[in-house]
Image (tube, rainbow, N blue to C red; front, side, top):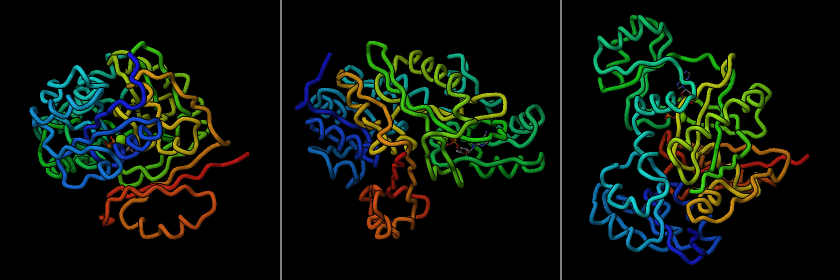
Length: 354
Ligand code: ADP
Ligand code: MG
């Protein structure tokens, strides 16, 4: 099925990913309709239509889907049962959502697809955490099974005596206990898959995090990462195929001494792919639109010799006059207002030329 320009694309979630998807869709002549519970989501500001309703409001979701030719999502913490009500129009489907929103299900799924994750245990009590510490050793990171992002819902255990404090720090919720990986680098594989099973990859960015939040993504990645892509990419392919995923999906990896380890998956466009807007011939956002509308894949070739994306987090946004005045710096601001600590406010991409 091919949806011609002029068709309406629904986007569930109204954050910056939805905003950049809508801008890419508009450039190809599509109309976007945002569905989000907030009053003024930043994606709605650049879209034709906005439905303000709760993500669990099935009636509102049905009316919204009736108004759209295809519906996608930019956020994975959505109620699967409610989204199932519009499954006929939804790309990617709810299986991708379900797997990505629970860290224990996610790890089981990744292992079943033949990819490797860090040694882990599902934990539901302090006693479970203590067993995990005894079996896996330290350091360990506890991550809540659900609703974690940007390092939230995580606590490290660096000695057995810290188990109880970490368990309390994550709110004593069902979690995974995961062995800390002494990685040499982090990277991501951004893959787009079409309904007929075709896929294409972007250059894999090397990602630097601070306090659990992405700071920079750089292509080309360094030699450690480059040497692991021939193992990492087939893992990503196995994951999207097993999910029958349509659209962009991102797999985050640790580049360990003995090869790539999958950290987590995001069934959507991803912060580590923002550099593609100027750094690749086709952006991750346009590629997602192409995949869900059944258009041919766009070229993922680099436009220069590489690119670096720097996130503007919290008060970083106050430096916008410097970036907007810097020749060759591509400034993106998400229109989110106040720069609260830890909030992603925008990003800057610099494309390098040979
Ligand atoms: P989020 O959903 O918040 O992105 P992640 O699981 O990706 O959660 O964790 C955020 C960051 O924390 C990672 O990118 C990495 O830098 C660090 N981290 C997470 N898990 C581990 C681990 N097992 N070993 C080492 N570092 C980790
Ligand atoms: Mg992550």
